[in-house]
Length: 153
Image 1 (cartoon, rainbow, N blue to C red):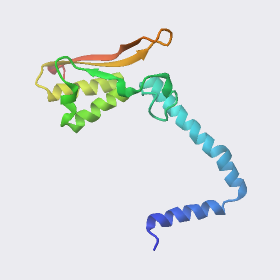
Image 2 (image 1 turned 90 degrees about the vertical axis):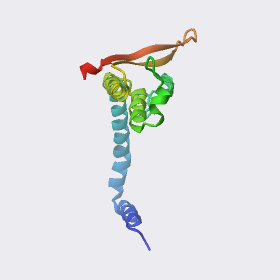
Image 3 (image 1 turned 120 degrees about the vertical axis):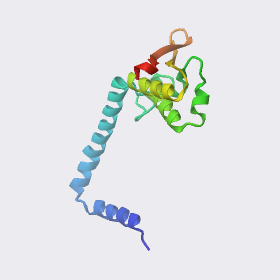
Image 4 (image 1 turned 30 degrees about the vertical axis):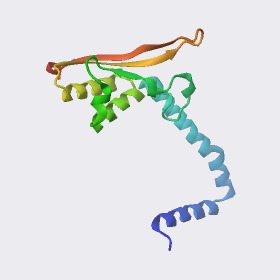
């Protein structure tokens, strides 16, 4: 017996097979490449405007930078591992900061850390690893930093 999901799949396959040859050729020639171009444009837009890691959103240019997994969040006087251990919201927010280290995500992360900690103020930094291709030296650069006070919230 066919399930409803299988029925829809089979119906879609039959519909595709019943298309005229011209329609199929048009879809294959223009539809699929157009879809691929749209994905590339969206990914490049997010990389250049929202600091999306080149490893995400299609991966175009991913080998031009070190994987975002090696980005480091630094909060003086606090352990990031301890913050995310039993807090799924913190894990998601800090993980999102590592993938897209922009001002918006940095502020969201700092506000959450400040809200869940017993501190009056908090500094949050995100560091990205860099390898100089000319001399092979590995270093880190500050990708973003924020300082928040509880009185400012």
